[in-house]
Image 1 (spheres, rainbow, N blue to C red):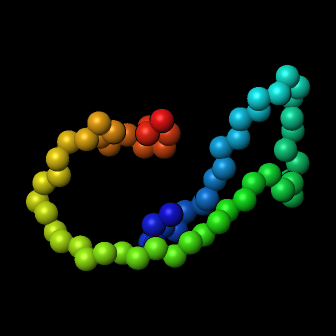
Image 2: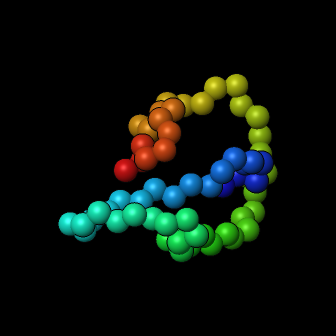
Amino acid sequence: LDADYRGEVKALLYNLGQDDYKVQAGSKIGQLILEQIHMGDLSECMELDNTERGNQGFGSTG
């Protein structure tokens, strides 16, 4: 999460079992560990190099 992010935090769940599983409201289904990070010195640039990921979003890094 970026320091200026203000949206919802979501969890992606995948059931590897054979049976359906219904998540009930209030269920404890995950953990979130927040750690403080240091933001290094930043510099402005006019262009960014292309990357393999490009501008693809959630789940695009494998």
